[in-house]
Image 1 (cartoon, rainbow over the protein chains, first blue to last red):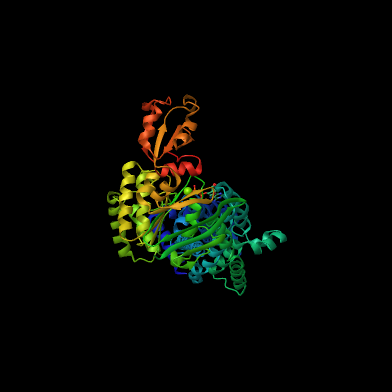
Image 2 (image 1 turned 90 degrees about the vertical axis):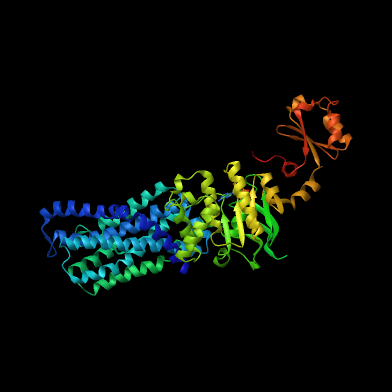
Length: 250
Length: 308
Ligand SMILES: Nc1ncnc2c1ncn2[C@@H]1O[C@H](COP(=O)(O)OP(=O)(O)O)[C@@H](O)[C@H]1O
Ligand SMILES: [Mg+2]
C-alpha cells in the first residue's frame, strides 16, 4: 500500500501549487448559498427546530463543501488524468499496482473533501454559527462521506468515455442528494417515500451528523448514520478498482 | 548470455481484432533489440505487455526470469519506459515532473532532485527547469520523457518510437545518448519507423507485420538473407519503364520489385547491371545505384516501404 501514498504524494505536489485557486473554487459556492439563502430566506423563516435558520443550514454547508470537493476531484480531476493528461497511465508505468493508483485517487478526493469541509467549518464558526464544542469531531467524521463521494465519483468516471457525460452524474445524483438531503429544511417535511429514499443519500447522513455535532444535539441516532455511511464504503470499496482496471489496462 | 526477456507466442485481441497473433523473441542482457513495423503492426502492444499496461492474454512472457501475466511493481521498479505518447504531467513544471516521478520509485527527495537535475543536463534541458510542459517544443518533451525513463537507473530500457517527432539534430542527440547507455550495459528494446535508427542502434531486430514476427536477425544478417546486395532504384513512373525490364533483370540473375515510386532492381553485380540498363532503355540520370539496406528487407517482406 506504500504505492498509494507515493501516488498521493504526486497529487500533493500539484495541490501545493494550486491550493489557492482550489480554495476559491471549493469555498465560494457554499458561502454563496449560505449568504443568499441564509440571509434571504432566513428573514422569512425565523427559527427552525429551536435554532436560527443560519445556524440550521451552516453545518449543511460544511457537508456540501465536503461533497463537492470529493466529487469534483474524482470526476473531472480523475477524468482529465485518465483521458487527457494520461497521468494515471504514466504513474502506472512506475512501480505501483492499478489498485494503488486508484487508492491514490480516492485518498486525494478524501483529503480535499475533509480539507474544504473544515475550511467552511472554520468560516461558519467565525461567523458564530457553530454553538457546540462537539463540532471538533466534524473533521474526523468527514472522512466517511469523503470516502463515499470519492468512491461513487471514481466509479462513475470509470464508466464513461466522454467528459460531457459527467453532467449526468452532477445533475442526476449530486443535485438530488443536495436538494433532498435536508440542507434547507428538515427532512421531516418531505413525503414519506422521499424520506425512505434518503437512506441511500450519503449527503443526508452527512448533514444530519454535521448538524448534530455543530449544534450539540448528540444522540445514539448519530451512530446509525455513521453505520450507514460505513456500510456504503464497505459495499462499494472494491468497485472503483474493478471498473478502472479495464480503463487503465488492455 | 542471460535472457532478460523471453516472449513466446504472445497474443492479444482488442475485442475481436487480433493485434498480436503469436509473437516470439528473446532479448539478452546488454543487447539493443529493435521492433520494426508499419503502424498497426503490434509493436506498442508488445511493449505495453513488457512494461505492465497490457496483460498477457496467451503465450508466455518471462522478464528477468520471472513468469509474467501482468508486470508487477517489483519488476517495474527496474524498467525505464518511454511510451509512444508523451504523458508528462502538465500540472507540474519540468524539474518537478522528474522529481515527482523519481519519488514514485521510492527515491528520497534530496536524491530525487539531484538525479533529476543530472538527467536534465544529460538530455540538454537544464535551461528548462522551471518551464511548464505546455511551453516545451515537441522535441524537448520527447527528450524529457527519455530523461524521466532514466531516473531509476533502469536495467531494461523500453523505448516506443523514441525519436518520432524529433528533428534530425535531436534524433542524433538521442542516438548518441542511447549508445552511451548501451556501452554502460543497459539492455534496450525500441520500436522505430526509421531504418537508419534501427541500423545504427540495434544489435538484433525483428520485423513485425499485422501481429506477427516476419523475421529476426542482426541488421546485416537480415540484409544478407532477404535481398541481393545491390539495388538500382529506377525513379520513373511505372508506365515510363519498358515492360520487359523484369524479364531482362531475371535473365541477368537479379530481381525487380515494384515500389510506389517506381521499380527497384536487386542484383549481386551492381556495377555490371549499372552498365547494362542504358541499353535496356533506362537513362542513368533517372536511376540510382546503392548497396541494399534494411529498408529493402522491409519493403520485400511487408510489401511496402516505411513511412517517411
Ligand atoms: N486500445 C486499443 N483498442 C483497440 N484497438 C487497438 C488498441 N490499441 C491498438 N489497437 C489496434 O491494434 C493494432 C496494433 O496496434 P499497436 O500495437 O499500437 O501497433 P504499432 O505500435 O505497431 O503501430 C492496430 O491495428 C491498432 O489499431
Ligand atoms: Mg505504436
